[in-house]
Amino acid sequence: MSKFQKLITEKPWVAWFLFLGTIAVVFLVGLFGASILERRTESVQQFQLVKTIPDWEPRNEVWGENFPREYQTYLKTRDTSFASKYNGSVMIDELERDPNMVILWAGYAFSHDYNQSRGHYYAVTDIRNTLRTRVKQPATCWTCKSTDVPRVMNEMGASNFYKQPWKDMGSQIVNPIGCQDCHEPNTMNLRITRPALAEAFSRMGKDIKNSTQQEMRSLVCAQCHVEYYFGGEDHTYLTFPWDDGFTVEDMEKYYDEIEHKDFVHALSKTPIIKAQHPGYEIFKVGIHGQRGVSCADCHMPYMSEGSVKFTDHHMQSPLNNISRSCAVCHRESEETLMSNVYERQDKNKELQDLAEGSLVKAHIEAKTAWDNGATETQMKPILTLIRHAQWRWDFATASHGASFHAPLEVARILGTSIKKSEEARVILSKLLTELKVSTPIQMPDLTTKQKAQEYLKLDIQKFKTEKKEFISTVIPEWDRQAADREKKMNQ
Image (cartoon, rainbow, N blue to C red; front, top):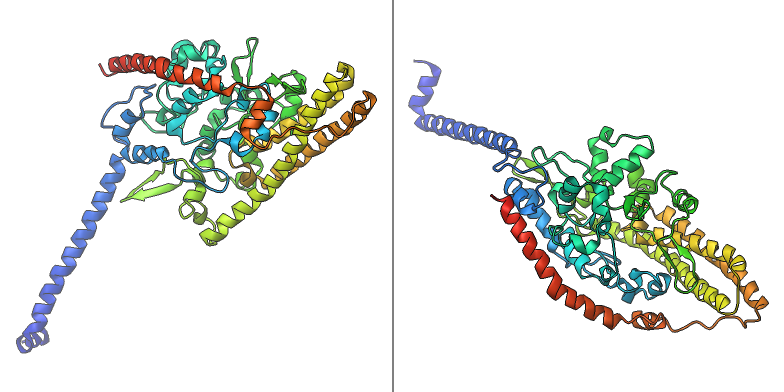
């Protein structure tokens, strides 16, 4: 009898122990193998379409049938509950918060209505509702609001689309920013769907098709979150002013050379360049942009479900998601990271307030000079300084998250804005003395949005009544026509 047989005979519990142990090991190995097989199956199936998506399909819910994880996270852009110290997803009346802006945009629709943007889900709703679209606008203003835009551009050409009146395209543009703005439908590869970005690259001697995947994770955002203007003979063609470079001075030079103006200021008569939202340009000169971090890394961080790794399409402030955005690279506590962001924003807000205060006084003092007989020759150098000062203030202020993306650059830009507006005020002071006007000029009470709009004699109640009528009569008809069109897409 062998030693093992002897052991089993003397101690039968050993046999039972080995028997049960073997069953347990086989069970665990089987469980582990099944888990691996399940994860591999999930990985393979994540790009298997359950339904073919047409190339220019604008409806996000149709994409969602194939990509439910991404779609469900995208729907979270409906959440408007998060408010950081200065921004977030909550709607904020910027003119109420900062009445100086009413004066700085006098003569332009932004002085009527300007709200902090909500999530992508509300892009179409908010542009329909704003008082700014009460004023005649080209269809170019729809360009970054909807997944319908690439479809319509494909049908009628980008140039022809831009030329249409904004209101004439209302029944065509109904689906908010979403899937096909950034993705190929069958592969989910990132793509550029708006021509202005590719055209700007081409004029700089670059082919955007040579961009890396990491670069594309920012460039799809740069289709819209950039500085732009309406060019061409009829001032409708969407154009990025990047031919001379990305800095505020480069673009200022570009605009001056073509003598571009977005509006003439109602008080000072300054030809103003209205900065849009140069987020990409400012991000590129900040430390994260310089280190190759992409927009999606922080605003759409990766997440996992089982073995499937996918991008969180709840595009939002990283401050509402520090653990999965900032903390991927930084080891400090959430409180410390939040404090670091607010410190930079607070300091630049001080400079922003100084720049605005100086500019408001410059506009009102310039109006006083005009009212007392100043000539165009006398005013020309003053208006050039005000133009450049306001452009720089707006460039630093209009971009989302600028004071965090590139705090040093924003401080530099605001510093030069203050310098130029104060230079304008020094010349104005001399001119006002020549014109025998007592100085300092008495400033109006601009402590609220209502007081600032009343100073400009804006009939906001009339504007609101007109918009209310538009929303109750025109928009339902747009939606009815769009629903009829989309029914045919299902056939």
